[in-house]
Image (cartoon, rainbow, N blue to C red; front, side):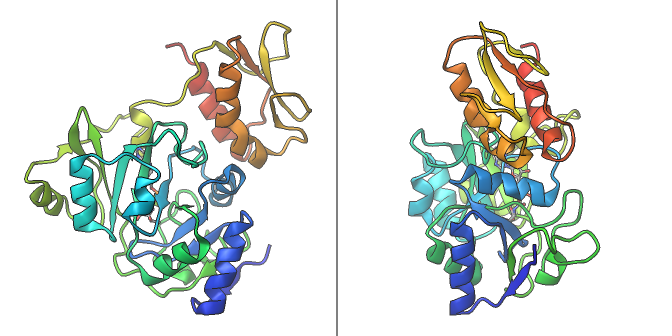
Length: 314
Ligand code: TXA
Ligand code: MG
């Protein structure tokens, strides 16, 4: 695909909003770094983010909304969370909060967790786009997996490891004023906890809360994925992988049709988009679950990583 470079004037913003509404990925400026945005309510669009980045693991993604009211439609805010939102939004603060049960966010965004990372960006282009699109936008940093986060449209399109040709468009809002990812705060055992240091210094947050932050203890087994450390989605039913169907099981097929088909024609992006939803629906059948072999390449590695975690003894 040819990646469009859009100027953030009226027509450029309208085109970016139209692309997002059709499920395309658009790189957008925020005050921290450029984000690779897609409609957070569309699982296929969210899977396309992972595919474009070549991201090997389904880390939970931050969801961007225009204001606190939009955030409150997606998550439950404690007193402390409300206080931080009033003090630091719009801005470089991400809050990890309990997901509302009626939230329309695709399961792939939260990687199956019951929490969601939310941010109200301050960048005027991000603000204008969120309002034009009228959608919550999932957006990790707009770099290929393993590369440095982009702070300009040129970084996003860098011929050396950038996303040119892999995404529909980049909205060029100039260089990012913060240039460092957002600070991520969550609550663990009721304690406000620094999950990732970032654009807002921890001591500013401690001053606002009038309380020290707990520090997240990184798990050496998964140092880069705070969202995966506490819990991950695992069905209550036993799960067999690389399996042929048996009559006593609910079978997730791949590459052939069925009532629980990950993808009829073996499309890994589609399978990724459907994975968490299908696992939940299969679990609700109350029978053991089996899953057909999934190839290990592309998004298949991430799908298999999640399936192995879900099937691990517990
Ligand atoms: O500044 C930023 O935060 C940029 C801009 C684009 O907003 N975004 C960004 O996204 O840095 P990303 O994907 O590179 O980092 C998001 C991190 C994930 O690695 C994950 O650890 C954490 O946010 N996260 C998101 N949702 C979470 C959740 N529900 N629980 C714990 N951690 C979560
Ligand atoms: Mg990143």
